[in-house]
Length: 103
Image (cartoon, rainbow, N blue to C red; front, side, top):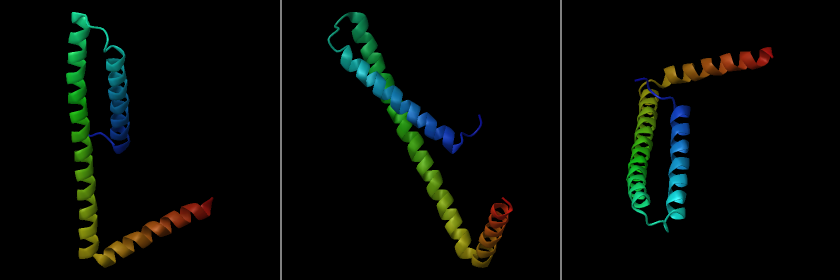
């Protein structure tokens, strides 16, 4: 399976939040219905919402860990190779400046 991009993960998390909020609202609206099928549906829905919340928290924690690791790796590289980092920054700045100047 391919890795999700940051934008895809953000959209997935936002979509999951919307689904969870809608499901919670549905549970509140059907709280007065005491038929066996409604009770079973509410129980299954509550379990699935709990699972979705857990998955969402896991996804957020994983994304945060990866972001921290990338930040630490960049920080370590800059500390280990300060002049290469300065040269890289200057090179990127030069290229961006040339591109902006051409317009």
